[in-house]
Amino acid sequence: MQYKVNIEKNEEGYSVWVPGLPGCWSQGSDEKEAMENIKDAIKDYLLTADELSADKETRLVEVD
Image (cartoon, helix red, strand yellow):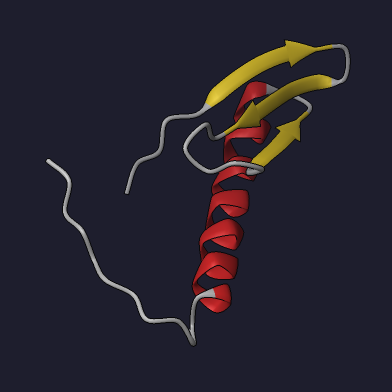
């Protein structure tokens, strides 16, 4: 699965976030570290979303 991320250099290193997953962001001292960290953040975000909807009625929708 691929997600579009935004990355920005700042005084502390790099900030990175996922526009399609509100609140999903991370950082790193360099671009490589930030990109590795956002992978973990995305996994945690999706796991939490699944846990929060575990007892809810859901449907899958395919988007072309």
